[in-house]
Image (cartoon, rainbow, N blue to C red):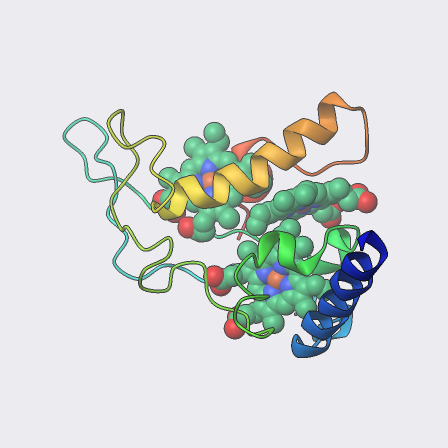
Length: 142
Ligand code: HEC
Ligand code: HEC
Ligand code: HEC
């Protein structure tokens, strides 16, 4: 009985693999890729001054070759391999700025990116492994 179950599980796994066209590093953008600006993002005022947009973020895919595409593009498996923009409607699409009340709201563009990018870099730093930047000015460069 157990063996039969195992075999059918393995078959199911292969079938689902076959259904998702596998993307490889060659399908990722080059290392001069800049994460697109989000149109209409609200900016947190500084005192009585209007807020300023951060510099854009350069994202080198090749430096992340050790990370599965689907770790970051976490909807691609359900979408048959298609890559969505993070800020598509129904995803991380809140244009509000981050404040005390919504500091953990994952629909906020800033929260979603910072959580994914900075948390991983911090965790790897703790483990003393090669890692990426955690300082604002090292990511917001463009
Ligand atoms: C560490 C996180 C991360 C990993 C790993 C990653 N990506 Fe990305 N990728 C991103 C981010 C962030 C964007 C920008 C998304 C956006 O515009 O909303 C992006 C954008 C893209 C785009 C461009 C989409 C567009 O229309 O501009 C493609 C294509 C892509 N990635 C493919 C891949 C492939 C293929 C892999 C695996 C080999 C991969 N990515 C691995 C984070 C990652
Ligand atoms: C799951 C872990 C993980 C995630 C998620 C991740 N990174 Fe990284 N990042 C790394 C590692 C590991 C390196 C170091 C690679 C190396 O030096 O070999 C790195 C390096 C970098 C670098 C430095 C590249 C260089 O030229 O030295 C930048 C910039 C960077 N990451 C930006 C981002 C951004 C922006 C995001 C979110 C969209 C992100 N990373 C998400 C693991 C991650
Ligand atoms: C690992 C890379 C990384 C680090 C470190 C980082 N950010 Fe970001 N940040 C991003 C990404 C990616 C986005 C989303 C794309 C965008 O809006 O440009 C973003 C978005 C933002 C936004 C909302 C959009 C905007 O332009 O105003 C703010 C504000 C922001 N970051 C501030 C900061 C501050 C302050 C720090 C330091 C405490 C910081 N970031 C550190 C990657 C990073």
